[in-house]
Amino acid sequence: MSTGSTATLHTAPRSAVSQDQGKFRTRFNFPGRLRPDHDDHGYGPLSTVVESFMDPGTLIPMHQHRNEEIVSWVPAGVMRHDDRLGNELVTDADHLMVMNAGDGFWHEERTLADDPPLRMLQIFVRPHELDLPSGIQHEPIPEPVAGEWRHLFGPEGSDAPLSVRNEVHLHDVRLEAGQQVDLPTEDGWDTYFYVFDGTVSGGGETLEPTESGLLVGDGAELTLTADADATLVAFRIDPDAPVTRQGTIGR
Image (cartoon, rainbow, N blue to C red):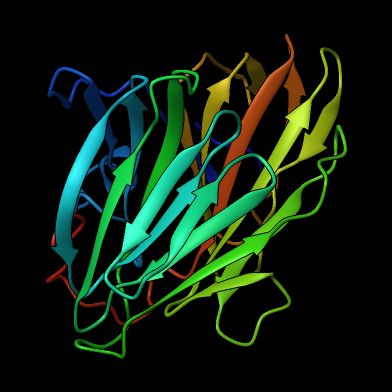
């Protein structure tokens, strides 16, 4: 629907694309599918946003990723990561992890039997070139402040605490019922957002948990109101950035 100026808000219901592997379950959100007649499941550098569930005592054995940037966003609980570089990392509400898989990165993920059930997002970004050097970033992130966006990752050289190798930024926000917030936007870029928890309204639409929106067009602006306590992520995306499509998962 129109939001004023030349901007348009596209919305999507909960994705029906999922995999059930018992103690590990995933639901795939494809930002490119929100835009009618768009011929790519991804949207520019943002390939896929995967809602992942891991029961306590789950192991995803050592495996390799190539040619994709994989971001682990854990709003609660813990995700434990080991890799062939000897890292033993815990990603939780206070930390963000970015695997810059590039020319190849091996890792495994697990939860312990006494860990809580885990629901997280794994975000797949297409790099601008193939076979870049691989590595990993694991950094503390600022404490959340209700009603204020946190800037969590951005392109190399941005002021975000972690980086990916293409033109996309990640923000998150916690809203209390009744709070309003403007969606992060940038001239010439579009913004995809996903409602992790709660309900928000804006642009004449109401989005429930696991629903998403894509705001496109020049002069795009959108104010969101929390109808109930809500947690959202938003991605500022350069839709014209050069991308590669040979990632292990995201492509």
